[in-house]
Picture (cartoon, rainbow, N blue to C red):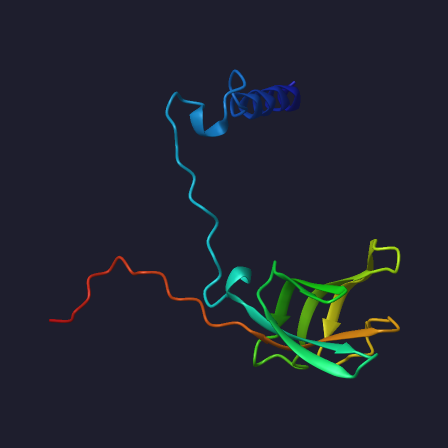
Length: 161
């Protein structure tokens, strides 16, 4: 009889902790609790503050352009659109050191329709790992700059006078 009683008691405790009357967990007791945003890792640069340099080669005329972009940006050069979705670099103490960018390449066809010819990660140190295979354009990452995130203000009083 005792194990059954413990099972019923533990079930009752679990059910009592459940959400009451369909209210949001932060309003269960009639009070609203403001949830804090998830903490950001110290030294982690937000994606919007990163800057990448992407190389674009037009094989028809041999012109190479350096496109300086932030994640989320797209640049149009004639009949090509290069989109940078993300860029990453490994930490300085990690080996091997890698610089990567998630890039999308759209090219305007002869019928004036746009076609995505590439979407994926490209690596500066290993260009053959995931190459853009297009007869006219070649795209590769040259750098990804991640300025250090500013430290959050401290709640401790400073000793400066």
